[in-house]
Image (cartoon, rainbow, N blue to C red):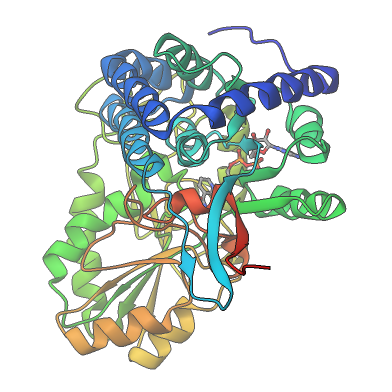
Length: 441
Ligand code: NAD
């Protein structure tokens, strides 16, 4: 589609200097002015939703309806963050001999390192609140998906944001990414990606005691109790692991079903999975598109060869494209690694359980803890199981995970810190405490 120059370490260094100067000017603006400029940026994104979605369809193969939502999510994040600029209040704390107040100071230059699976929203999860809190942002998109990020930075400039406040630095992770992680002028890294790379980024951040947010992988459970509305649970399950062709950190790739409802649930799930329209991502009727790359297709096939016996297997178009069919495996047939590791493709494994205790034990039998769903009509059970599952984002009788107004992040090895929600800006500030004496001498 396009040739994009990679940013060298020297280029990163120059970008940090420019960002640092831009940040000082940005933080010195009146809060209302910063909020106004972010709202203008949001309006520019709103006017470009179709254009941005079109880039995402071609670059990442996302179905166009999903890509429009993703661009709209960037607009919403900017609007929401803009509302926080003038509400970034400190506290006044009762002390003897004077007054004590706190300030939420910007960190300075923040680097956001984004993955390829949801390039626009994830870039904005970090960028919008970081800018709102008075920081400059250096955004490193994934190697395969730099184009929407580059366009967003142009829109920011056109909307009136100061030059160099938001810079996009495309490039290879081990070169451009590491140069950002190691740079002393970068105050914080927001990394979203795989656990293996996240671990490496965390170790390098330790050298400079650098602030860090990690949003890593998942192997999330979808727990279906026999007393649930099984029709609704089955009807909504395909989207819970097939959205974005399963290339979703919150994919409910482990379906746990109470044995008493196991056969009935699978019977209801089959037509729902087979009804998922798979095909040309540019077609508005398409629900599932291809995987992003040949490499990703190879990776998914290595986890689950297409000859593995499946309880349910969908259809894919023949011919050009990195197609992998929607696949539901019963745990007794699932390859061992596919049952415990993040496949990042349209594959789910179904496992029966006897009772609530076993459901919780199975749900927690993973090093991850990002998301999960609980389906039951018993309110007490919904509360007990939601509290017992060690994951950051749970939904009862739904599969929602990410809303810009609610906190998002992982337990265990799914991450560190939280993004989004009412406290999103706080992750991009340092608390400064100032005591002012009122003593006479
Ligand atoms: P990845 O870890 O390969 O790459 C992520 C980003 O890090 C890319 O921009 C890459 O260029 C960069 N990078 C690679 N090596 C680096 C290094 N040594 N130093 C600094 N940066 C480096 O991940 P991916 O394959 O692009 O994304 C898929 C993963 O992201 C999955 O595991 C998925 O679950 C996870 N993810 C998590 C969330 C979340 O919010 N928890 C959201 C989306 C995706």
